[in-house]
Image (tube, rainbow, N blue to C red; front, side, top):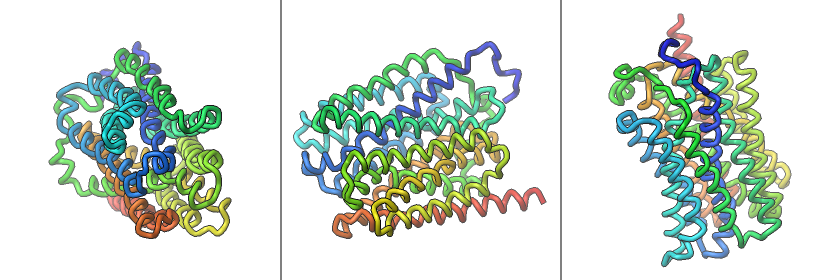
Length: 402
């Protein structure tokens, strides 16, 4: 996109605010209900296998939305789709407070709400990154990393806010908190309705889905995103239940040091890269992150002392910080005409990893007699594959330059 197409008088700070709050909304959608896994287990009688289906439904729904976005978003328009994303996110979160108790079986009511806000989350995931990428910012990779850091701060806010609420008012009042969290996306409808939004690629210049799938390098980016999603979400979705049941700490401590510590270090990793990333070769950093992620999974699963298991959870957050935004930045830089279809297929791949990873953890945990340590150990395949794929991407770039 040429600089002439940009409008310097536009207030792109408002666009950033809208996207930041959109990623905070996505964090609320992805992380609020997992904090209640054991509460649902006890109050509704849901099995660990049932609980594993909740993140699976969330990310599979996002996966379907990602696929549809690749074909239809450019026809419908970015603004309409991104506003709809916030409406559905707000409605889904509000529904959690009422629909499960009104349903013949609470589990199906929960799934209905999860699917509703997952559609909104999927739309935001596909559109948020290219909206920022299209804005006239100089450091694209750094801005992408900073944008995705707000998902982390949203996780921290969700976990801290929920923990304080539960301590003050009791876990049994979680329905009130669901209504409170719904305010964020409902407010953000106005921001997306009024902020400037630029096209990511000029009309008619974007690569088609067929062209992308014929590009060998694009398949490496697909694998990167699958592994990034699985490495991140497997630990973050199960960190609360893992800390409480396997490490023997109470829920407040488990939530603060498990998923909250995970999110803080993931956010710090992304903010660090946003500030200093220009000094670091991105694919090399991804390889190192994969190795560190492998070590953190092993530490969390095999540690004999609870404190070391929690350190493993938190360290995993730092290791996965660059994986998702880094994969997007590498893809955008190497395939500059990828357009909406590329971002949609990459988001689809990340969500595929986010669906499969936690489901594997839950399935293995269930088969091992509800031993979540065994499930966490099963997740080490993904960081290993990510590091290997990043090495191939780096090698391909080196070969092309030579």
